Length: 262
Image (cartoon, rainbow, N blue to C red; front, top):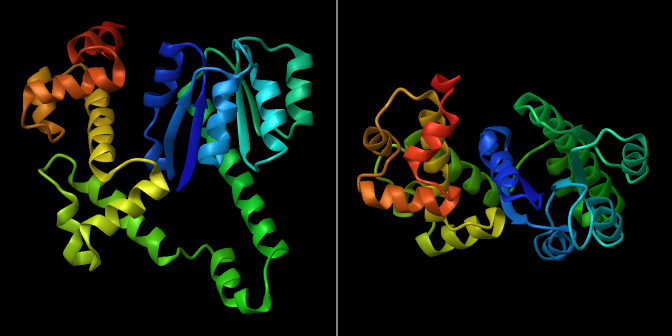
Protein backbone atom coordinates (compact mmCIF):
# COMPACT_ATOMS: atom_id res chain seq x y z
CA UNK A 1 0.00 0.00 0.00
CA UNK A 2 1.31 3.43 -1.01
CA UNK A 3 1.32 6.15 1.67
CA UNK A 4 0.13 9.56 0.50
CA UNK A 5 0.74 12.99 2.04
CA UNK A 6 -1.53 15.86 0.91
CA UNK A 7 -0.04 19.37 1.17
CA UNK A 8 -2.47 22.20 0.43
CA UNK A 9 -3.15 25.41 2.32
CA UNK A 10 -6.80 25.76 1.23
CA UNK A 11 -8.92 23.57 3.46
CA UNK A 12 -11.78 23.01 0.99
CA UNK A 13 -9.43 22.05 -1.84
CA UNK A 14 -7.43 19.72 0.40
CA UNK A 15 -10.56 17.96 1.64
CA UNK A 16 -11.92 17.83 -1.91
CA UNK A 17 -8.79 15.99 -3.08
CA UNK A 18 -8.87 13.69 -0.07
CA UNK A 19 -12.44 12.58 -0.60
CA UNK A 20 -12.65 12.77 -4.39
CA UNK A 21 -11.44 9.24 -5.05
CA UNK A 22 -11.44 5.86 -3.33
CA UNK A 23 -7.75 5.72 -2.42
CA UNK A 24 -7.94 2.13 -1.17
CA UNK A 25 -9.19 1.04 -4.58
CA UNK A 26 -5.86 2.22 -6.00
CA UNK A 27 -3.81 0.58 -3.23
CA UNK A 28 -3.17 3.94 -1.54
CA UNK A 29 -3.94 5.58 1.79
CA UNK A 30 -3.77 9.23 2.81
CA UNK A 31 -1.67 9.07 5.96
CA UNK A 32 -1.72 12.79 6.77
CA UNK A 33 -2.44 16.31 5.55
CA UNK A 34 -0.26 19.44 5.74
CA UNK A 35 -1.31 23.08 5.45
CA UNK A 36 1.90 24.58 4.03
CA UNK A 37 5.37 23.63 2.81
CA UNK A 38 7.01 23.83 6.23
CA UNK A 39 4.31 21.65 7.75
CA UNK A 40 4.71 19.28 4.82
CA UNK A 41 8.47 19.13 5.25
CA UNK A 42 8.09 18.11 8.90
CA UNK A 43 5.50 15.45 8.06
CA UNK A 44 7.61 14.02 5.24
CA UNK A 45 10.46 13.58 7.74
CA UNK A 46 8.12 12.00 10.29
CA UNK A 47 5.94 9.77 8.10
CA UNK A 48 8.19 9.08 5.07
CA UNK A 49 5.33 8.97 2.55
CA UNK A 50 5.72 7.22 -0.81
CA UNK A 51 3.91 9.97 -2.72
CA UNK A 52 3.49 13.67 -1.93
CA UNK A 53 0.66 15.58 -3.60
CA UNK A 54 1.23 19.31 -3.15
CA UNK A 55 0.13 22.74 -4.22
CA UNK A 56 2.88 25.19 -5.28
CA UNK A 57 1.75 28.54 -3.87
CA UNK A 58 1.46 28.26 -0.09
CA UNK A 59 2.41 30.48 2.86
CA UNK A 60 5.65 30.04 4.84
CA UNK A 61 7.16 27.61 2.29
CA UNK A 62 6.05 26.87 -1.29
CA UNK A 63 5.71 23.38 -2.74
CA UNK A 64 8.82 23.57 -4.95
CA UNK A 65 11.04 24.55 -2.00
CA UNK A 66 9.50 21.84 0.16
CA UNK A 67 10.16 19.11 -2.41
CA UNK A 68 13.71 20.33 -3.06
CA UNK A 69 14.61 20.31 0.64
CA UNK A 70 12.80 17.05 1.45
CA UNK A 71 14.41 15.18 -1.45
CA UNK A 72 17.86 15.74 0.04
CA UNK A 73 16.86 13.48 2.94
CA UNK A 74 14.04 11.23 1.74
CA UNK A 75 13.02 9.44 -1.43
CA UNK A 76 9.45 9.85 -2.67
CA UNK A 77 7.43 10.51 -5.80
CA UNK A 78 5.59 13.82 -6.08
CA UNK A 79 2.58 15.29 -7.88
CA UNK A 80 2.24 19.08 -8.11
CA UNK A 81 -1.13 20.78 -8.36
CA UNK A 82 -1.07 24.46 -9.33
CA UNK A 83 -3.54 27.17 -10.17
CA UNK A 84 -1.16 28.28 -12.91
CA UNK A 85 0.21 26.64 -16.05
CA UNK A 86 3.30 28.87 -16.03
CA UNK A 87 6.25 27.37 -17.88
CA UNK A 88 8.91 28.31 -15.32
CA UNK A 89 7.02 26.44 -12.57
CA UNK A 90 6.64 23.33 -14.71
CA UNK A 91 10.32 23.55 -15.66
CA UNK A 92 11.37 23.65 -11.99
CA UNK A 93 9.12 20.68 -11.30
CA UNK A 94 10.73 18.69 -14.10
CA UNK A 95 14.22 19.41 -12.75
CA UNK A 96 13.09 18.06 -9.37
CA UNK A 97 11.83 14.84 -10.96
CA UNK A 98 8.18 15.59 -10.20
CA UNK A 99 5.99 12.83 -11.66
CA UNK A 100 3.10 15.05 -12.78
CA UNK A 101 2.31 18.78 -12.97
CA UNK A 102 -1.48 19.27 -12.86
CA UNK A 103 -3.39 22.52 -13.26
CA UNK A 104 -6.53 23.36 -11.26
CA UNK A 105 -9.45 22.79 -11.50
CA UNK A 106 -8.54 19.14 -11.13
CA UNK A 107 -10.54 16.27 -12.63
CA UNK A 108 -10.65 12.90 -10.84
CA UNK A 109 -9.38 11.00 -13.88
CA UNK A 110 -6.37 13.34 -14.12
CA UNK A 111 -5.47 12.69 -10.49
CA UNK A 112 -5.91 8.92 -10.88
CA UNK A 113 -3.69 8.86 -13.97
CA UNK A 114 -1.05 10.90 -12.13
CA UNK A 115 -1.34 8.60 -9.14
CA UNK A 116 -0.66 5.52 -11.28
CA UNK A 117 2.44 7.18 -12.74
CA UNK A 118 3.66 8.11 -9.26
CA UNK A 119 3.11 4.55 -8.02
CA UNK A 120 5.14 3.17 -10.94
CA UNK A 121 7.97 5.54 -10.07
CA UNK A 122 7.86 4.47 -6.41
CA UNK A 123 8.05 0.82 -7.46
CA UNK A 124 11.16 1.55 -9.54
CA UNK A 125 12.75 3.43 -6.63
CA UNK A 126 12.03 0.53 -4.26
CA UNK A 127 13.51 -2.02 -6.63
CA UNK A 128 16.62 0.08 -7.17
CA UNK A 129 17.12 0.45 -3.41
CA UNK A 130 16.67 -3.29 -2.89
CA UNK A 131 19.24 -4.14 -5.56
CA UNK A 132 21.70 -1.49 -4.36
CA UNK A 133 21.69 -2.50 -0.69
CA UNK A 134 21.41 -6.30 -0.65
CA UNK A 135 23.71 -8.96 0.79
CA UNK A 136 24.00 -12.59 -0.27
CA UNK A 137 21.83 -13.69 2.64
CA UNK A 138 19.05 -11.46 1.30
CA UNK A 139 18.91 -12.98 -2.19
CA UNK A 140 15.72 -14.94 -1.55
CA UNK A 141 14.00 -11.96 0.06
CA UNK A 142 15.07 -9.67 -2.79
CA UNK A 143 13.81 -12.10 -5.38
CA UNK A 144 10.46 -12.27 -3.62
CA UNK A 145 10.16 -8.48 -3.40
CA UNK A 146 11.08 -7.92 -7.03
CA UNK A 147 8.43 -10.41 -8.07
CA UNK A 148 5.88 -8.41 -6.12
CA UNK A 149 5.31 -10.94 -3.35
CA UNK A 150 4.18 -9.45 -0.05
CA UNK A 151 5.62 -10.08 3.37
CA UNK A 152 3.46 -11.84 5.94
CA UNK A 153 2.64 -8.54 7.62
CA UNK A 154 1.66 -6.87 4.34
CA UNK A 155 -0.56 -9.81 3.44
CA UNK A 156 -2.31 -9.50 6.78
CA UNK A 157 -2.86 -5.77 6.33
CA UNK A 158 -4.15 -6.35 2.79
CA UNK A 159 -6.61 -8.95 4.11
CA UNK A 160 -7.76 -6.54 6.83
CA UNK A 161 -8.41 -3.80 4.28
CA UNK A 162 -10.24 -6.22 1.99
CA UNK A 163 -12.37 -7.28 4.94
CA UNK A 164 -13.38 -3.67 5.53
CA UNK A 165 -14.16 -3.11 1.84
CA UNK A 166 -16.38 -6.18 1.73
CA UNK A 167 -18.10 -5.78 5.12
CA UNK A 168 -18.15 -2.06 5.98
CA UNK A 169 -21.98 -2.03 5.87
CA UNK A 170 -22.07 -4.63 8.65
CA UNK A 171 -21.10 -4.45 12.30
CA UNK A 172 -17.39 -5.30 12.20
CA UNK A 173 -14.51 -5.37 14.64
CA UNK A 174 -10.82 -6.17 14.57
CA UNK A 175 -11.69 -9.17 16.74
CA UNK A 176 -13.43 -10.69 13.70
CA UNK A 177 -9.97 -11.11 12.18
CA UNK A 178 -8.18 -12.66 15.15
CA UNK A 179 -9.17 -16.25 14.36
CA UNK A 180 -8.77 -16.24 10.55
CA UNK A 181 -5.39 -14.48 10.75
CA UNK A 182 -4.30 -16.37 13.90
CA UNK A 183 -2.94 -13.19 15.48
CA UNK A 184 -3.98 -11.15 18.50
CA UNK A 185 -6.13 -8.02 18.20
CA UNK A 186 -3.36 -5.98 19.81
CA UNK A 187 -0.75 -7.19 17.31
CA UNK A 188 -3.05 -6.62 14.33
CA UNK A 189 -3.96 -3.10 15.41
CA UNK A 190 -0.31 -2.26 16.09
CA UNK A 191 0.79 -3.47 12.63
CA UNK A 192 -2.21 -1.85 10.93
CA UNK A 193 -1.36 1.53 12.44
CA UNK A 194 2.32 1.12 11.57
CA UNK A 195 1.50 0.58 7.89
CA UNK A 196 -1.48 2.91 7.44
CA UNK A 197 -1.07 5.50 10.26
CA UNK A 198 -4.63 4.70 11.42
CA UNK A 199 -6.01 2.35 14.01
CA UNK A 200 -8.35 -0.28 12.56
CA UNK A 201 -11.43 1.51 13.93
CA UNK A 202 -10.30 4.86 12.52
CA UNK A 203 -9.83 3.29 9.11
CA UNK A 204 -13.28 1.67 9.23
CA UNK A 205 -14.90 5.00 10.07
CA UNK A 206 -13.00 6.85 7.35
CA UNK A 207 -13.90 4.22 4.75
CA UNK A 208 -17.56 4.29 5.78
CA UNK A 209 -17.64 8.09 5.53
CA UNK A 210 -16.09 7.90 2.06
CA UNK A 211 -18.83 5.48 0.98
CA UNK A 212 -21.49 7.69 2.58
CA UNK A 213 -20.17 10.66 0.59
CA UNK A 214 -20.48 8.67 -2.63
CA UNK A 215 -24.13 7.90 -1.84
CA UNK A 216 -24.86 11.48 -0.79
CA UNK A 217 -23.46 12.72 -4.11
CA UNK A 218 -25.90 10.46 -5.97
CA UNK A 219 -28.72 12.25 -4.11
CA UNK A 220 -31.05 9.25 -4.09
CA UNK A 221 -31.28 8.32 -0.41
CA UNK A 222 -32.28 9.87 2.88
CA UNK A 223 -29.41 10.68 5.18
CA UNK A 224 -30.54 8.25 7.90
CA UNK A 225 -30.80 5.37 5.42
CA UNK A 226 -27.35 6.17 4.04
CA UNK A 227 -26.03 6.04 7.61
CA UNK A 228 -27.46 2.52 8.00
CA UNK A 229 -26.27 1.44 4.55
CA UNK A 230 -22.69 2.39 5.43
CA UNK A 231 -22.58 0.59 8.78
CA UNK A 232 -23.62 3.33 11.22
CA UNK A 233 -26.42 2.00 13.41
CA UNK A 234 -26.31 5.15 15.57
CA UNK A 235 -27.50 8.15 13.51
CA UNK A 236 -26.12 10.77 15.89
CA UNK A 237 -22.72 9.07 15.87
CA UNK A 238 -22.78 9.09 12.06
CA UNK A 239 -23.45 12.85 12.04
CA UNK A 240 -20.63 13.40 14.54
CA UNK A 241 -18.06 11.35 12.59
CA UNK A 242 -19.13 12.89 9.26
CA UNK A 243 -18.64 16.42 10.62
CA UNK A 244 -15.29 15.42 12.12
CA UNK A 245 -13.89 14.39 8.73
CA UNK A 246 -15.64 16.87 6.40
CA UNK A 247 -16.42 19.96 8.52
CA UNK A 248 -20.05 19.86 7.41
CA UNK A 249 -23.19 17.81 8.06
CA UNK A 250 -24.30 15.04 5.67
CA UNK A 251 -27.32 17.16 4.65
CA UNK A 252 -25.11 20.15 3.85
CA UNK A 253 -22.76 17.93 1.85
CA UNK A 254 -25.65 16.38 -0.09
CA UNK A 255 -27.18 19.77 -0.82
CA UNK A 256 -23.89 21.15 -2.13
CA UNK A 257 -22.46 18.17 -4.01
CA UNK A 258 -25.41 16.07 -5.14
CA UNK A 259 -25.28 15.39 -8.88
CA UNK A 260 -29.05 15.93 -8.97
CA UNK A 261 -28.42 19.62 -8.39
CA UNK A 262 -26.64 19.96 -11.72
